[in-house]
Amino acid sequence: MLDDNADIRHLLRVTLERDYLVEDFDNATALLEFLEETPCDRIISDLCLPNMDGFDFIFALRKNARHAGVPVVAYTASGSAQIRERVSAAGFAAYLEKPGPMKQLLFVIAQQLERPA
Image (cartoon, rainbow, N blue to C red; front, side, top):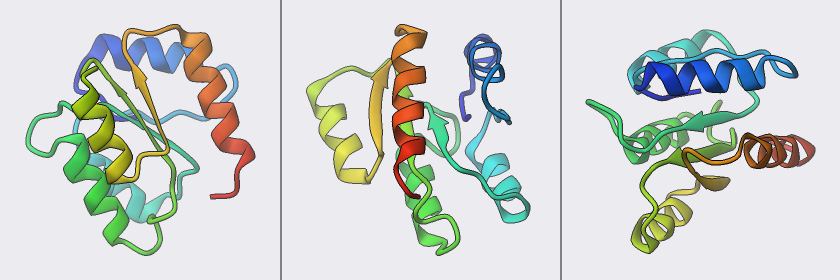
């Protein structure tokens, strides 16, 4: 998961690690470096990040053939219709507003895992 807010990362980690192996990152560069060594099934990413926002991150991810198919869920406080359109156009697998119900996030992740990467 990718979020610059430590509290959000902690909440997601506690929620997700019951069922999933979770790695968390506070910046996109660190996550991209991690992915060079370790494969990943799904990514949850904030959009508002320092240095490289979520849109730049997914663009960089898609440029690498090994990671181009990894579904990325946008989990963000940015809830405008314009942001939703950008999320869809950028190739995110799903869009969720935070703070949202953890049940919804778990449902979306499970749904994404049922689809082939």
